Image (cartoon, rainbow, N blue to C red; front, side, top):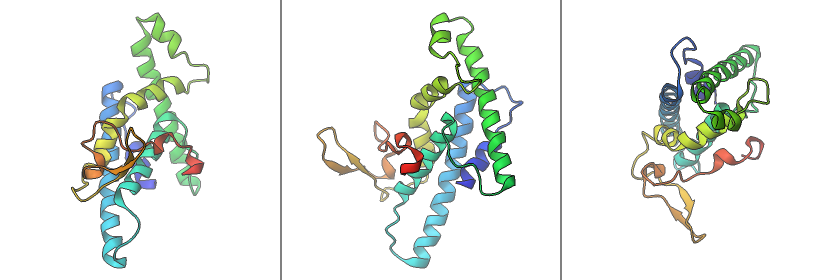
Length: 188
């Protein structure tokens, strides 16, 4: 998880952040996180042989963590004072990003201003949820960028039966094959 936020922490608050540049920054962080997981997973497999730890499940869990961070729902506060301070700074920066986006998208639209009205002291939870729902497919593609054809993920079909994705952890599927990002963090 530390690697996940390291890349998010490096987003420059002074840059001209908008809804599109934030997506690019989050996708870049997700791609680096996926690279790191894939590298460590490969090393683990080489050392311990066939492990029940599946790369797609590991990527899905990290994807869910990124979703929690973006939406302001991350429960992990850090393991030491330095990590805790970095987490606070990351959340502060995300609030600023979403405040900028909120100002941009609501300045000429009363309906959007009402929909995304911030009643939580600068947290912009509704806007953050909407942003995540709108962009989660792109973040999934970024985190699974290095997945291979043999990397499959279980998914439930519309008929309720379990099927595997067609490789690449389902990166090329129409819908993101996981809903772990909507499972409360303490249950994952």
